[in-house]
Image (cartoon, rainbow, N blue to C red; front, side, top):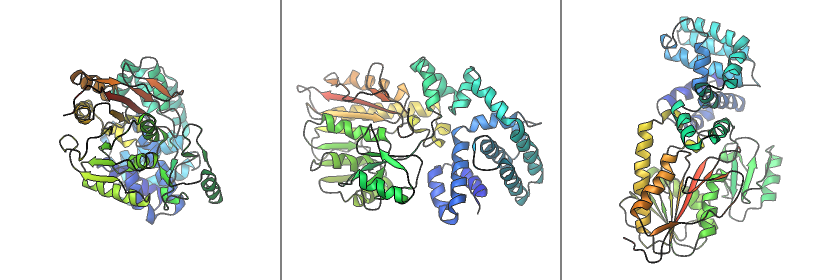
Amino acid sequence: MRGIEASLVVWNEVRQGQFASESIRRIAPGLTPGDLTLATSLVYITLRRQYLWKEIYGRFLSASPSSVSQLTGDVLCIGTAGILELRTFAPKVLVNGLVQLLRKKGEEKGARIANAVLRRIASVGAEELQKIERSGGQKEQALAAGVPGWVASSWRNTWGEEAKSLLKMARIRPYASFRLSGGASAGDLIEKARRKGIRCWQSPAVSSSLRLGTTIYPKDFPGYEEGLATPQSESSMLVSEVMKKVYRGGPILEMCSGRGIKTGHIASLLPGIPLECIELSRGRVDAARRELKRLKLGENITLRQGDALTIEPEVLPGMISLDAPCSGSGTWNRHPEGKWRLTPEKLTSFALLQENLLKRALSLIAPGGIVVYSTCSLMKNENENVVAGALSSEKNCMELSFPFEGKLFRRGKPWGTYVLPGLPWVDGFYIALLMKKSGGENR
């Protein structure tokens, strides 16, 4: 299978609910490095702004876009994205490859349509793209940013003028960052990476992070197999760094602990502290066990499968980390399929779950203890509104000051702090620090 065909396979699986990264990992063994790079590039540049590409190719169709077959529509979308964004692949070769695939599938009519439309886009499509990108219209701004129109409207309502900056940030291409652990030497790993042709350097923002000038498969980075380096965005790392900064004592409870990425970071920053982790998904609990084994961690760490809303912790926690399930709107640059699956109804469902989880966390924390609430979302519904709802029923709790300063931090209105996705290594995050007053009760 070649790169162009592989991109269509992945695209189809994403439509059926798969994550692009998982689908790409599955087909990677059957591709050459060059074809893998081409397939990955085509998939992600198409996913990030798919409605923009549909808008553009629709302008060159003589009939309605709904009149073409699904496969032809996929070819037109991927072809338009590739022609207008890929800088290292000849448009003529891409068009020929896509047209041949349609003919191979018996779609001769679709092949003729794709050939005519894509060649036209190769000729004058850049002009149409510039018109959209330079437009001040709200629809065009959302298309250019690759953000669903209703989300862009929500950002304008809650962020005001700064919504324009968020839309610009939505176009930043993400790069990899690796968290160092296990006594890893930044200098040694940087040198080993250099020998493999990987350019990286120590982050000026998070001392335990190495920044890369590209994306990479984790196993290709030196130190990964040995547990010395872990792929993680710097904003995600900041959650654990904040926990270390404000920690006052006692066991730690991690609610919704996922695949163990933050678990490993918390354990390495606060060694020897009892850490109890609750996760609903059995598959994620198993993944967390593998992650902790890779990191050579496990002592004082308890992994439990269960519902964080109902399961009772084994010991009274002095700190709780609640990285709540969310829309992922702050990570859409890295995981673009998520933005096209989110609906207003799903957002409301997330917010209800988040508020219930936060209320549960505040009820469990020991007096004087701290709850660190975080999401990878830029939606007020999932952040300030959730904190406000939880605090309205937990009168004996108060917010603590955020312990870091920087250009990418923004105070929530009025609760918590946002980390803006203004760099390739930084996703959008929200963090709120809530302390139960010493006179409060735990239930």
